[in-house]
Image (cartoon, rainbow, N blue to C red):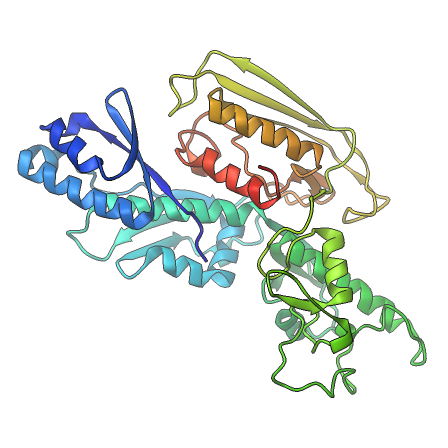
Amino acid sequence: MEFITDMTVIIDEAYFEDPRRLVKILQSYHCEKKASCYKVRGTFDELDNLSIRLLEVRDRSDPVAHRQTRPLRVKPVEVSGVVMDYIQQKRAEELRKIQGSSFDIVTQPDPGTVHHDHRSTVQVTFRSRHASSNPVRTDLVRQRFITFYQRTASDLQVTSIPASPQRDHKDLRKRFPHLLFEPGRNRGELTVTGPFIHIAKLKEFLSGNTASSSKSPGDKGPADSRSGRTSGPSSTRDKGPEEDPCPICMEQIDATEKETLRCKHSFCKGCLKRAFDYKPVCPTCGELYGALTGTQPDGGKMKVTKNISSLPGYEKYGTITIHYNIPSGIQKEEHPNPGQPYEGASRTAYLPDSSEGRRILTLLRQAFNQKLIFTVGRSTTSGRNNMVTWNDIHHKTSTTGGPTHYGYPDPDYLSRVQDELKVKGIE
């Protein structure tokens, strides 16, 4: 799985003795010039190769200046311990792909030791395994990690379930491989971390099991589902072992109940219907099937103002400020705890007042109208339940601080959030 399709670097011609040689090298790249700087966009491999070529030019033109200006280390980033614990345990393969064979991504302290404190942070450091490595390459690894981290964090939810002695927790881990199950802070509960859609499936499964256990052996009904049984003959025992199981319930798919989407992934009709009731996307690959409507509470307002001050990285433009307000209310059926009150939220986000920024604003307004910006759940900062929280569309809530503090400068933020919106059918 690729996490970003392109990256952006800023190159200042002041560091080069012969600007004409710099321009000649950049001719084969997609770039635009602003003042004395070139903004170059490309894939990781393309920019990696460009950085090597540029260092060679600087070495030949002024080796002393090059040694003096070359950064000695790449700045570490501070991230959530909860998110990093999930990444290390459930997305380790993607993390290994980012660091490759030439770099190490080191986390201190161990995220597992601070997982229960939702406000805890850990420091992630990027180190080359070769003393002579180009520091620009290390910084590109850092940028790839930040993008990966933000996209993981934006879709992550934390919840708690009872640690019932009658429940086979090994079976839960097997059924829900995308979820991280760990002992909770309170005795008798498990803390579960994972993508929102998989948390929703877990809650549906547990609800079905609870209803099923209250029925007599002769009862039949929706609660007597395949996913709720742990013993006895399977209703699909006549199916061949070579057939793939339904990715949702993990049981063999009955031929009369099989539904295959245009992306070629197959499911039980009932499982797919329940999944589409939550979000009309393929549960396996995420392809969109219809317009999305989220679970953002009713009654919210989105107000936009503008001012002449600029954001770091967008010095030629003013600033668009988005003011969101979602009032408190009572949860509905689409929320985690129907009938219970939830606490509202007021949030502020920032965009550059450029043509691209104004386009993103239009898309965000459409997402807001489709109830996709916020949801009700557990706050990842305070750990409190029944709160209005951000959904999975990334916003810049600070004007400064860079990507790890949800601020600027962040050269590829606008293209990244546009990709996030496109996945939801908003473009």
